[in-house]
Image (tube, rainbow, N blue to C red; front, side, top):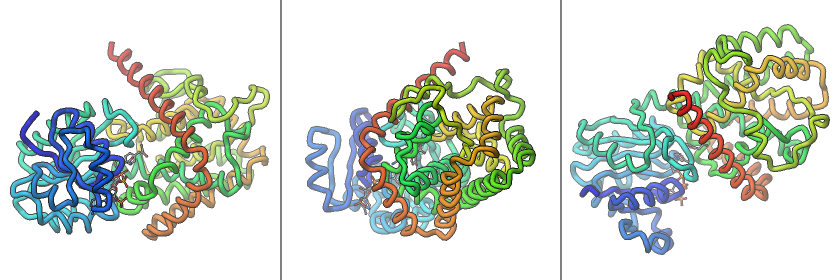
Length: 440
Ligand SMILES: NC(=O)C1=CN([C@@H]2O[C@H](COP(=O)(O)OP(=O)(O)OC[C@H]3O[C@@H](n4cnc5c(N)ncnc54)[C@H](OP(=O)(O)O)[C@@H]3O)[C@@H](O)[C@H]2O)C=CC1
Ligand SMILES: O=C(O)C(=O)Cc1ccc(O)cc1
C-alpha cells in the first residue's frame, strides 16, 4: 500500500476495528491506548505485522502521517491537549468521536497550525461490517490532496463516503442517533422499573417488539460514554431529546384523559407530515423498509399464538413521529447519513404508520385498554428523566442511571448480541437486495 503511516490513539472497540482493517489492507498502523494497556495490546496484535503498538500518543503522533483520535468524546480535549503538540509536521489529524463540535474545538485549540484536519465518523458499531455503511468525512482544515489521501486510506472499509461539515454532521446525528437512543434507553428504563424482562411476556414477543427488545439490549450492552457523549456534547441534540420527552408526555395525557378524537387528529397530522401520502396500500413513496415476517425471526422468547397476542399502544413509536413532526424533521432525508439502528427504528415506525388498521388498533388500545398503563407511566417518567439528565449536561447522572439498568439486563447480553447481530445483518441484506431490485 501507500507510504503513509496511519496513527490510532485509543484502541478501544472502534480503534481496534480500524487497526485490523487498515493493516489487513496493507497500511502501516501505529497505535496506542493508555500506557497500562501497552502489554496486552502488544500481545493482541503480535500476529499483525503491519501494526506497531506504542506506549503513548506522543510516539504515535510523532511518527504517523494521518492520526485518528478514537477516544471517548468526553476526553477529547484532554487527549488532544496532551498529544496534539507532538504531531509530526505537516501531518493530517482527525477523530472518530460521534460528536464533532468538541472534537474540532480541541483540534483548533491544541494542534500546531501546520497540521491539517480531516475527521471521520463510521456510522455503525464495531461489530457491524462497514461495507456499504455511511462513513462521514469532514474536510475541516485541509487541502484537497490531504482530503483525498484520507478518503483513499479509508476506502478499504468499502463504506459510502459522505462529505459534510462538522456542523451539518452534528445536526443530522442529533436527529438520527441521539433521539433514537433516547427512545430505546427509555424503554429499557421502564422495563427495569417494572421488573420485567419483556421477552418473557406475551405482549412483548414477535414482530416490531423484537426490534424494540433487541436494539434496547444492544444499546445497554455498549459503553455508556458513547451515548452520553453524543447526547450531551452535541449542541443540537438536547432540543430533539426534549421534544421526544414532551411528545411522549402529551400523548400519554391524551390517552389517560380518554381524548380519542384529539389523539387521532394529532397522530394523523404527524403521519401526514412525516409519511406524506404514503399509505399501507400504495407504494407511492417507496416500499416498506421492513416486513413483519422478517422481524418475527429474531426473538429472544417464544412467539405467542395469534389469539394470545396482546395489543400495544406503541406510545414510543407514536411519540417519535410526533417529535419529528414538531421539529420539522423528515427522517428519510437523513438516510444517506443513517446508522443501522436508525434505519430499524424508522422501519418499525413506518411499519405502524403505513398500516391504517394497525394504527386504528393502536388508537383504540391507547384509549380503551388500561392493562399497560403502568408500563406507559414508567416510560413517560423515563423519557423525561433522560431528557433532564441530558439538558443539565449531567455526565455522571447519565452514567449511573445507564450502568444500573445495564446491570439489570447484563445476563442476557450474550444472547441478545448474537440475535441482534443476526437481525441487523439479515435486515440490512434484505434492504440492500430490495434497493438492488429497484435499480434493475
Ligand atoms: N462504539 C460505537 O458503536 C462507536 C463509537 N464511536 C466513537 O468512537 C470513539 C471510541 O469509541 P469506542 O471505541 O466504542 O470506545 P472505547 O471506550 O472502547 O475506546 C476508547 C479508548 O480510548 C482509550 N483512551 C482514553 N484516553 C486515552 C489516552 N489518553 N491515550 C490513549 N488512549 C486513551 C480508552 O481507555 P480507557 O477505557 O482506559 O479510558 C479506551 O480504550 C468514541 O468517541 C465514540 O463515540 C463512533 C462510532 C461507533
Ligand atoms: O447505530 C447506532 O446508533 C449505534 O448505537 C452504534 C453507534 C454508536 C455511536 C456512533 O457514533 C455510531 C454508531
